[in-house]
Length: 153
Image 1: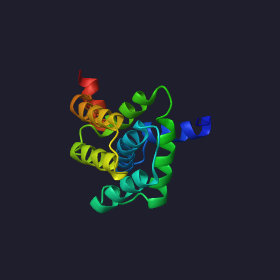
Image 2: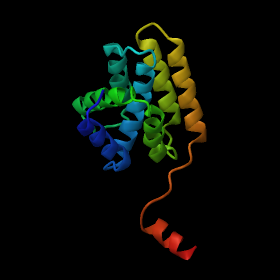
Image 3: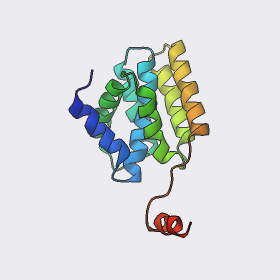
Image 4: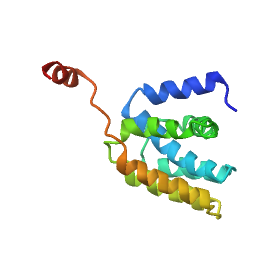
C-alpha cells in the first residue's frame, strides 16, 4: 500500500508536470509499470527494461536514471490500488496528442517479454494500452492561445 505522501507526489507530477519531457517520462514509465504489475510480481528485469528502453531511444533525456527508477517504483505501487485505471488514463491523457503511442506499445511488449514469461494478464495490459492509445481524448491546449480562443467562443 502506498502512503498519502507517495500518492500525492506522483499525482502532482502527473497533473502538473514541469515539461513535456516529464510528461513523456511518466507516460512511458506507467506503460511499463502497468505490464510489470499485471502478473502480480514485478521483476527487477522488467523495471530495468523500462529504463533501458527509455535510455536507448533518448525519450526522456532530462530525467535522471535514478528519477526513472524511483518513478517506476512509485507508479508500480500506485497501480496496485483499486483506481489504477484512472491513474493510467490521467497519466496518458496529457501526451495523447504526441507521437508516443508506438513507443508505449513497443515498451509494453518488451516489458512483458523481459522475464521470459508472458503472463495472460500482461497480454491484457498491453491490449488495454493499445485501446487507450487509440481512444483517449486529445489533451486540450493550455496557454494564451487557448484562453483567447475560449473567450471568442
